[in-house]
Structures are given as C-alpha cells and as structure tokens.
Image 1: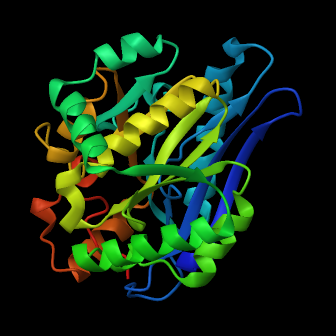
Image 2: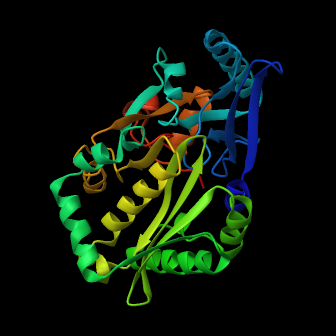
Image 3: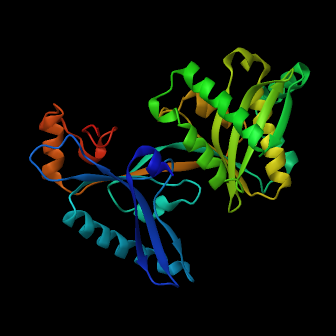
Length: 320
C-alpha cells in the first residue's frame, strides 16, 4: 500500500526453508539524480519500522539464518546496482540485536512503551502528576472519548487528520491521498481502532491505533490546537491504556520523539505515561562506494567531508 502511495517497488528478501526462515522487506528506490548512465537504486525500510523478522522452531537457528541472509543480500546488492541500504529497526521486537556486531548499526532514539502486563493500578501510579491533573482537566471540560471503527468515524478521523496536517504545515508525505485512506481502512479494518474526542458534539482530536500480536501501536494522531488546553491527548492515551489492558494486549507502543534529542518535547510528553522505554536503532550500509561518492559529488558534497555510514542524514545525497 505504501509502495503504491510512494510509487516505489516493494521487495522482500527471504532465506531459509518452510520450517526456519528469515525475511526482510524494503522499498527499492530508483535514484533519478544519477549521472553516467545505467539505473541505480537504494534499499530503504518501509514506513515506519522494518528490519528482519523470522519464524523458527528453535531460536538458536536465528543467528545463522541472519548471517546467511546478510551474505545473500550483499551479493544481490553488488550485482544489482544497489548503492546504499537504510533500515529502521523495530524496537517492539528488538531486531537490532541481529546487527549488534556490525558497525552500520546506530542508536537513534528511545521510544516509550506502556507495559500492560502490569496491573492497571500500577500503570496509573507510574503516570506523572501532570497526566493525572490533565485527565481531570479533560473530565471537567466534559470531553467525550468514543471508540469506533465505523466508516463514519473513519471519515471523521481523516477529516481532522487532514486539517491538523495543514495547520502544522506538515511535509508532503503526511498529506495522504483519499485513495490511500480508504485502502488503509479496508486493508486494516480488523486491526485498527479509532479513538475520537468530542467537545460539545465537535471532534477535536482523534487517534488511530493498530493492534496485533499482543502490541497496540499508536499509529496516527491529530488534534485541533485551539482545544489543546482541554488536554484531549492525555485523555485519549489514558482511554487507550484502559481499553488495551482490558482487551488483553501486552504492550502499548507510544513511539518516540520527533528528533534524536533526548530533550525532545514529544518524547518527554510520552514519558509522562510510562518509565519503560525501548531502543530504536537504524542500520546503514554502503554497497557501492564509488557510486555513493559520485552521487554526493553531484549533490555538491566534498569527499573529505563525507561521513558515510556515520552521517546523521543517510545517505548524504538527495533521493529525488
């Protein structure tokens, strides 16, 4: 679905047999700023987490499968004009551990997770004082939290999300098309839930969550800034925690901040709900060093200033 939205090819690399196998998905992005002829590509994790996933009878088989997949993938890249590879590894399953001895593995940021295996009483005890105060503010304001997955509520979610992205002047990527929204609703209808906050009959905030394999993911969220003083986000997250705990989920993944900064305000807000964090890593690898340098040169980058896999923004050339 995202490959269609972004107009890129989705590829899977699978290694193993029907009993023990490992798989890693990528978007294969064509490099259109290429000079010198021929087609070149980058491999990039699908939005928003990727990296290897596996199915094995014995966990002891995983390291060997991972090494074999890595070797086969490197050979593929060498023979198919792949310049660089970038993976966003999934903190919910700690698949960064498969790259722990590789120099291309880079810690990016913490993400926040609510451990729903704890009692609800313990979870609420771990809320910061500000959260408890903000929930009371929302209750006094008369906010109403509605959980639904009807088409009508989906359209209300889409409406407020689009409005919120416009007000925030978000990047083009986040202004999804109408087809994307309705394909998403059809494809993930069984996994999604919509939590919508009403104030005097008007939707002022909405959150889309996806739940599967014991984990609820806070996927998309939007709110109208003129109503933030009523604390609809605190109210919503508290409601999702109550629902997810009662529904038998084990974890609620709130994600991380908007940057790598440890003082990121979004990260600090999420930490007010839980002290439990997980590590988000990225994996970077250059497969064609000569072409990488050429693309950087075309982009106006001096070779002596290139940081390669240690670059904060990788790759160091733009993908057009």
